[in-house]
Image 1 (cartoon, one colour):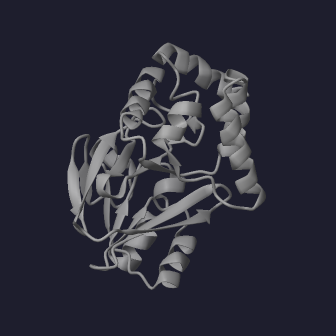
Image 2: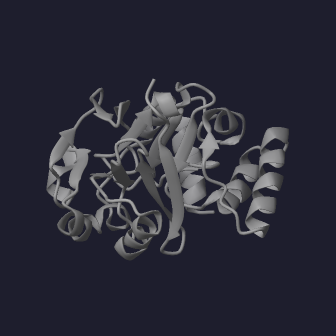
Length: 243
């Protein structure tokens, strides 16, 4: 069995998170998205890690805007969705649904999860019980449908919900409290949601992140995971957009 990978999470911009994943055995280090290059460089230097790969979830500037600066500085290879290659700066390795690759002895599985954007993918590492889900889902929420349809987002969330319950979901933004306020308008009597929000508020009061969440927690409390149909999800998403 491969040695566990280290995951380092740190704030970027006003509500993004940056993620580094590192092998203490091989020295390989990947950055999941590139929201704020200066913060990522500081995190790498603080850990004395050298960046070898960039894994993009989608093309938005707060996720891929730092690709070229980091690629030029470290020579890192950029992975991302092949269907979105024209919008991902510096893309070297094109990925599609069902693909996988090895990283420091761990198999990384690719799942296409359109909805937020057409070319959104997530990175699932079963040996680490971890998925980097970008802006497809958040704690108690899901991404705004900028390009995709409710049907696509419903299917994408279904893929994530089908992962083992103990899978940790590393979402890219700290939106939990605002998402939770809306979620309570959908299911005000959901005790799991009420408990979730109490814990989230306590963490934020201590300036602690509410990320990662888990598949199990979201299935119990996230209104988008709990939508019975794509039509219902679309109605909830529209209501959230106007909340």
